Length: 159
Image (tube, rainbow, N blue to C red; front, side, top):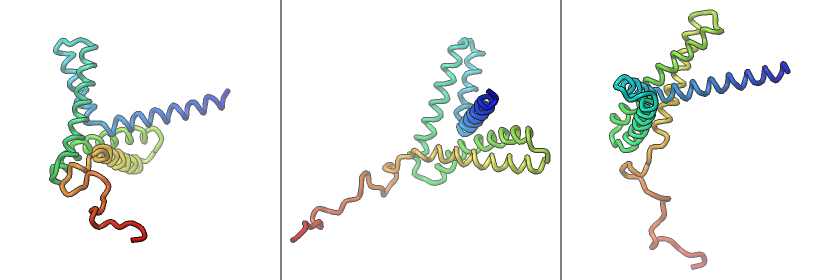
Protein backbone atom coordinates (compact mmCIF):
# COMPACT_ATOMS: atom_id res chain seq x y z
CA UNK A 1 0.00 0.00 0.00
CA UNK A 2 2.88 2.35 0.75
CA UNK A 3 4.43 1.76 -2.67
CA UNK A 4 1.15 2.61 -4.40
CA UNK A 5 0.96 5.84 -2.41
CA UNK A 6 4.51 6.81 -3.38
CA UNK A 7 3.89 5.99 -7.05
CA UNK A 8 0.65 7.97 -7.13
CA UNK A 9 2.44 10.87 -5.44
CA UNK A 10 5.13 10.84 -8.14
CA UNK A 11 2.48 10.70 -10.89
CA UNK A 12 0.54 13.55 -9.28
CA UNK A 13 3.66 15.68 -8.97
CA UNK A 14 4.52 14.97 -12.61
CA UNK A 15 1.05 16.00 -13.76
CA UNK A 16 1.26 19.14 -11.62
CA UNK A 17 4.63 20.09 -13.12
CA UNK A 18 3.35 19.39 -16.65
CA UNK A 19 0.31 21.59 -16.04
CA UNK A 20 2.48 24.41 -14.68
CA UNK A 21 4.82 24.14 -17.66
CA UNK A 22 1.95 24.12 -20.16
CA UNK A 23 0.35 27.12 -18.47
CA UNK A 24 3.64 29.02 -18.35
CA UNK A 25 4.37 28.45 -22.05
CA UNK A 26 0.96 29.91 -22.91
CA UNK A 27 1.24 32.85 -20.53
CA UNK A 28 0.10 35.57 -22.97
CA UNK A 29 -3.17 33.89 -24.05
CA UNK A 30 -3.82 32.91 -20.42
CA UNK A 31 -3.28 36.48 -19.24
CA UNK A 32 -5.54 37.90 -21.96
CA UNK A 33 -8.23 35.31 -21.19
CA UNK A 34 -8.07 36.02 -17.47
CA UNK A 35 -8.20 39.79 -18.01
CA UNK A 36 -11.21 39.53 -20.33
CA UNK A 37 -12.93 37.05 -18.02
CA UNK A 38 -12.46 39.23 -14.94
CA UNK A 39 -13.58 42.33 -16.81
CA UNK A 40 -16.68 40.62 -18.20
CA UNK A 41 -17.52 39.26 -14.74
CA UNK A 42 -17.32 42.77 -13.25
CA UNK A 43 -19.35 44.10 -16.17
CA UNK A 44 -22.22 41.77 -15.22
CA UNK A 45 -21.80 38.81 -17.56
CA UNK A 46 -22.11 36.31 -14.73
CA UNK A 47 -19.82 33.41 -13.92
CA UNK A 48 -20.54 31.28 -16.98
CA UNK A 49 -20.40 34.28 -19.32
CA UNK A 50 -17.06 35.37 -17.88
CA UNK A 51 -15.60 31.88 -18.31
CA UNK A 52 -16.80 31.65 -21.89
CA UNK A 53 -15.55 35.16 -22.71
CA UNK A 54 -12.17 34.34 -21.16
CA UNK A 55 -11.80 31.12 -23.14
CA UNK A 56 -12.82 32.83 -26.37
CA UNK A 57 -10.38 35.69 -25.82
CA UNK A 58 -7.53 33.31 -24.94
CA UNK A 59 -8.20 31.15 -27.98
CA UNK A 60 -8.45 34.19 -30.22
CA UNK A 61 -5.14 35.55 -28.90
CA UNK A 62 -3.46 32.19 -29.43
CA UNK A 63 -4.75 31.72 -33.00
CA UNK A 64 -4.14 35.31 -34.08
CA UNK A 65 -0.62 35.26 -32.62
CA UNK A 66 0.34 32.06 -34.44
CA UNK A 67 -1.29 33.23 -37.67
CA UNK A 68 0.43 36.60 -37.51
CA UNK A 69 3.77 34.89 -36.85
CA UNK A 70 3.35 32.60 -39.84
CA UNK A 71 2.14 35.32 -42.21
CA UNK A 72 4.73 37.95 -41.25
CA UNK A 73 7.40 38.28 -43.92
CA UNK A 74 9.86 40.51 -42.10
CA UNK A 75 12.10 39.03 -39.44
CA UNK A 76 11.68 42.02 -37.15
CA UNK A 77 7.90 41.56 -37.11
CA UNK A 78 8.30 37.84 -36.45
CA UNK A 79 10.78 38.64 -33.68
CA UNK A 80 8.35 41.10 -32.08
CA UNK A 81 5.45 38.63 -32.22
CA UNK A 82 7.62 35.83 -30.89
CA UNK A 83 8.84 38.01 -28.04
CA UNK A 84 5.24 38.93 -27.18
CA UNK A 85 4.69 35.25 -26.45
CA UNK A 86 8.15 34.30 -25.11
CA UNK A 87 8.81 37.11 -22.62
CA UNK A 88 5.66 36.60 -20.48
CA UNK A 89 6.26 32.86 -20.63
CA UNK A 90 9.86 33.30 -19.48
CA UNK A 91 8.70 35.52 -16.62
CA UNK A 92 6.09 32.96 -15.59
CA UNK A 93 8.68 30.18 -15.85
CA UNK A 94 11.04 32.14 -13.63
CA UNK A 95 8.37 32.61 -11.00
CA UNK A 96 7.23 28.98 -11.03
CA UNK A 97 10.78 27.61 -10.94
CA UNK A 98 11.76 29.98 -8.15
CA UNK A 99 8.72 28.96 -6.11
CA UNK A 100 9.49 25.26 -6.59
CA UNK A 101 13.18 25.81 -5.84
CA UNK A 102 12.32 27.55 -2.57
CA UNK A 103 10.73 24.32 -1.40
CA UNK A 104 13.89 22.25 -1.60
CA UNK A 105 17.01 24.35 -2.22
CA UNK A 106 18.66 26.04 0.74
CA UNK A 107 21.06 28.49 -0.93
CA UNK A 108 19.62 31.57 -2.56
CA UNK A 109 22.19 31.64 -5.36
CA UNK A 110 21.22 28.10 -6.41
CA UNK A 111 17.53 28.99 -6.29
CA UNK A 112 18.13 31.96 -8.58
CA UNK A 113 20.24 29.81 -10.90
CA UNK A 114 17.48 27.22 -11.17
CA UNK A 115 14.91 29.98 -11.72
CA UNK A 116 16.95 31.49 -14.58
CA UNK A 117 17.31 28.05 -16.18
CA UNK A 118 13.56 27.54 -15.81
CA UNK A 119 12.90 30.92 -17.42
CA UNK A 120 15.15 30.06 -20.36
CA UNK A 121 13.51 26.66 -20.80
CA UNK A 122 9.94 27.95 -20.63
CA UNK A 123 10.65 31.01 -22.80
CA UNK A 124 12.33 28.82 -25.39
CA UNK A 125 9.43 26.39 -25.32
CA UNK A 126 7.00 29.26 -25.86
CA UNK A 127 9.07 30.50 -28.80
CA UNK A 128 9.06 27.02 -30.33
CA UNK A 129 5.33 26.70 -29.69
CA UNK A 130 4.62 29.92 -31.59
CA UNK A 131 7.00 29.25 -34.46
CA UNK A 132 6.39 25.51 -34.79
CA UNK A 133 3.23 25.68 -36.85
CA UNK A 134 4.14 28.54 -39.12
CA UNK A 135 3.21 27.71 -42.69
CA UNK A 136 6.35 27.76 -44.85
CA UNK A 137 4.31 28.07 -48.03
CA UNK A 138 3.44 31.65 -47.10
CA UNK A 139 7.07 32.74 -47.20
CA UNK A 140 8.46 34.01 -50.50
CA UNK A 141 10.65 31.66 -52.50
CA UNK A 142 9.28 28.45 -51.00
CA UNK A 143 7.70 25.67 -53.04
CA UNK A 144 4.25 24.47 -52.12
CA UNK A 145 5.03 20.79 -52.65
CA UNK A 146 8.01 18.54 -53.11
CA UNK A 147 10.46 19.86 -55.67
CA UNK A 148 10.24 18.07 -59.03
CA UNK A 149 12.37 18.55 -62.13
CA UNK A 150 10.68 19.87 -65.29
CA UNK A 151 9.12 17.18 -67.47
CA UNK A 152 11.43 17.94 -70.38
CA UNK A 153 14.49 16.99 -68.33
CA UNK A 154 13.25 13.65 -67.03
CA UNK A 155 14.43 10.51 -68.79
CA UNK A 156 13.06 7.04 -68.85
CA UNK A 157 15.16 4.01 -68.07
CA UNK A 158 16.86 2.45 -71.09
CA UNK A 159 16.59 5.39 -73.52
